[in-house]
Amino acid sequence: MNPRQRRRKSAGGGWRPWLVALILALAGWGGASWMWNHVHPTGLMPLIFLLFVALALTGATFPLFWLFWRLRRWRRKRLIVPRWRPMREGAWVGLYGFFCGWLQVNRALTPAPALLLAGGLLFLELFFVLREKGGAQ
Image 1: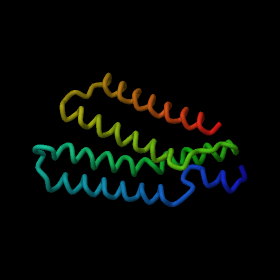
Image 2 (image 1 turned 180 degrees about the vertical axis):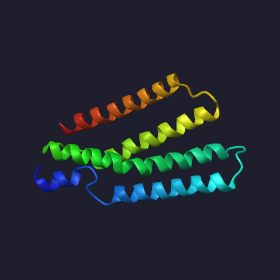
Image 3 (image 1 turned 180 degrees about the horizontal axis):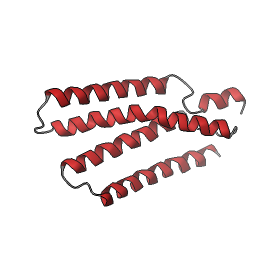
Image 4 (image 1 turned 90 degrees about the vertical axis):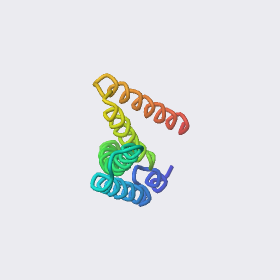
């Protein structure tokens, strides 16, 4: 694999993930703030609010995961990170925020369900990472 192909497959190697993250963050924070100020919490409105918060968390954490993988790749020259992995990890944070918010609305959020949920999402991410590594060989 030549260096150009390696660069193309690396984390954040293009502008598309950044555009998606920007759209998600703007739509999420804008929708959540609009709902916070203009909508009464009845019916399905709390779930729609949590959906906007999940979108906002996904878009806002993508740059953090991208920076993490960029610095890790800088330290290890041969590390190849798939382009959409930071976005997927940001989506896990958004999903975690959504479910924790939903549990809090129902007054069921305690440390045990929060840790079980985090463990389940980490297990799913481990499954995806191992699947990527198995397909690359």
